[in-house]
Amino acid sequence: MKDKDLKAAFFVGIYALIFLIFCIIFDTILNIFVFTLMSVLIVNLIAKFFKLIKISTKSSIILGLIIYFFIIIYGIILIIPSVAQQFGEFIATINSVFENKAWESYLENNPDLLSGVNDVMNWIRPKLNDLTTSLLNNIAKGTPTFFITIFYSILLTIYILLYSSWLKNTFPNLFPKDIRNDVATFFDKVYSTLSNFVNVVVINAVITAIAFYIVSSFYFKELAAILSFWAGITNLIPIVGVFFEYVPVFLFSLTLGLKGFIIVNIFVIAIHLALFIIFVNVMKMNLNLNPVLMIIAIIIVNQIFGLVGTFFAVPLLIFIVAYWEKFVKPKFET
Image (cartoon, rainbow, N blue to C red; front, side, top):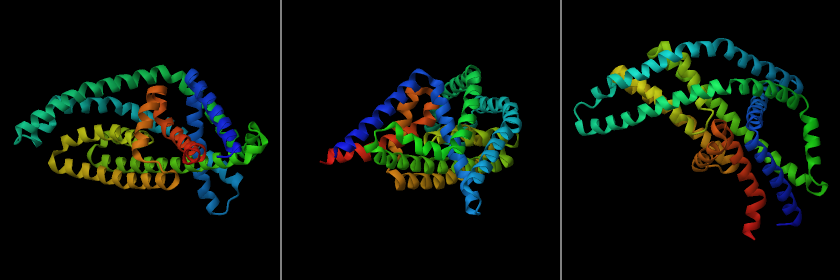
């Protein structure tokens, strides 16, 4: 590795370390960063569709901002009240499944297996109750921080997108002149991979939410909004989020009888299998990220940063892998 590469690795590493320290000390900074990063990348994704029909870059970004923030406002005004209204029914249905032991009718001819399933369900029930309580407590405690995060993230998203050219030209000035080209190449690679990651995750989440709304309209009409909302949010967490999304659907499907149980679960598994294959292939194609690394990253970063760490884990992993490939691996190879 050349001295110039070592110098670039040093400065990039120092700046990244300083940023992480600030995020650990001031968690609001991380919240704003994650939401702003996702917002910028989602607006750019929307803007790409307008560029395809020959609309100028600036006009595409403005249209993307309008659509993105309209969706957020629409969600707050229409979807969230509906979800809040259905939340009580959601909890009541889950409790009913456990109290009535809806799974017993499927396993009555296999008492040994039924005993094992009962043990598993007895273990799951308090875990779900703890998760629900923790979620409600975090929502109550985090409401002021949430509005602060939203306010600054919206401002940053607008200004970053409208002044993206200025930022792109100014950012390299944080580094010595002789390494600016190398640093710019590195961050272009990171940004490109992050963009592809967010594009795939958001598209997967939207497809899953729509699919869940359709199937819920047939089988759980009174819970369609909350199940589709839950599916969309949890699918923003790669791989691990699917488990949290699937548990309530699986429990509800136990109340549908054998035919309904099979149809709903085959549908859900088929949707996730197709989207998972697409997601993994895109990540491998762009930066050799495999599911094992993602799961490890989510576990570790979640322990450090809490709930927001589940959304921050893969972007951080993308940065670390890019840093390894660009600066560390060449040194090890020599």
